[in-house]
Length: 459
Image 1 (cartoon, one colour):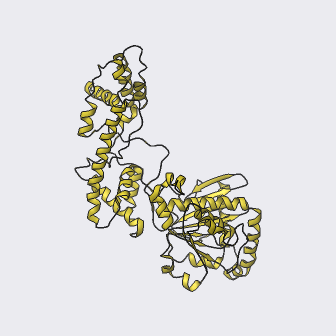
Image 2 (cartoon, helix red, strand yellow):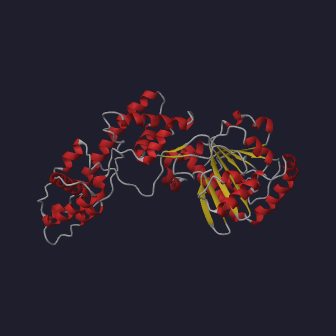
């Protein structure tokens, strides 16, 4: 069994490769930072740079080489903060993700002025904490893995081969033969009957027609496939030529994507998809995924139906690949196949635009009119705590920094469960961002451990 067998079932080998090859920087030496590091080492992330405020070890559960034993193949480079070097944007260009856990004002001040790659900033204080996703560019999700999906069966607008197959069934079949008919065929035949009468096509009309079909079934049969067809009658009215709103949003934000790395691949694929939808071949329909749900049917009929959908999906991928090839950028066939299977569920997330902590947190949160008052106060306190926002001037912030960071180290021993929770969420969001799978927070997550409540909001 593969070492990462369980998680491969979540984000497959392509996702695992992106995670393993990702270059991750963690800014800050704290229990929170070490928990994030641990949680990323375990699923296989292997290239880390940890930037410490000072060359000294922090109190934590992980000592010596214990972290390396979690992932012996990993490389963890520890460097001390150097303002001259790290105030340069070129230092950060080599990283795919930056996770900021430091509470040092001088470091945060520098980071707020430099152009960073995609970043997560995290902080905990006593029983509360937050995680914020930061990037100047939109984040596109190729595989959003929605919990519920509507199968793309093209019943309303079938292609030639599917149309011929759906019309090939005789509804004067004997009882045993009729029970072998897939519900897609029954829904299509009901749709034809409704259209033939000139009635408006609706889910209720299709259902009523299917109920009438039961008269064709001999007494004694359960007609289970008819009940199944009635249950899924809404699929007859699905408009396969309508571009989903989530995909429209992706097209609108397409030009804001950075033209490098995997983002360049996403940009090329989305531009190719716009061309595909405008072509005569597509008939204004997205590439077919090729998958159909399980249904009551004979094995022969089900496999014949599945073969039709898979054949059409391969043809769509082939035509789409010919468009992608014109970009002259090599994109693996596996990536193109995955993209075509998930075009209906592509998503885009707008992260927080910058790390900026001015205007003050209260002014930022005042824009969140729908946010609960206690949430605004909690997040304001957390941001103030991390960025040392107060009425004192910068000099006073520097003078009190050493004392306040010592206090936070002491707090970490008392409130480690909260630290562990926030670090777990930060690691989870890191994996989503790096693999372009599952939808990350958009864009701030706040946790209140006293009331055991959490919220997400946009900043």
